[in-house]
Image (tube, rainbow, N blue to C red):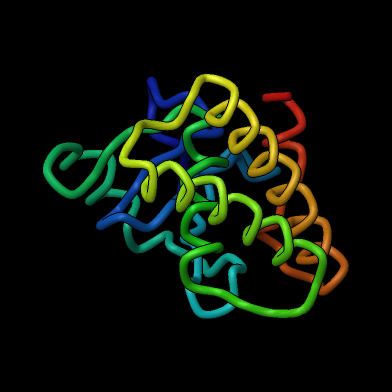
Length: 147
């Protein structure tokens, strides 16, 4: 599959609320990866490329790199659980959000910044672990460029 002219890679999207990234391949093409909510890893999504690129709107949205990182970590925290340190950080974010909900208020600027920073950190932690496990879609550098 060759890259679509005019498409700048990497590119980030949500597809029916699941994070999807499109990245360049060494041969000049592109590879698409969709978050697997069961494992937190990445599964090939090349079959979605045309639908995403030509049907943006409705259930498909374009994201910035930081929005992609934030959404991915929101999804991982929502669907996964475990004992690794990353899960304690997910619980920290949940506690901050629940405190604001209990107090019937919006998150403060400081709380939003703290959550955003924690999610960048958990993204890197999760992606590094995926790389060690051999996940070809893992890329912790996405969040590093957003710090």
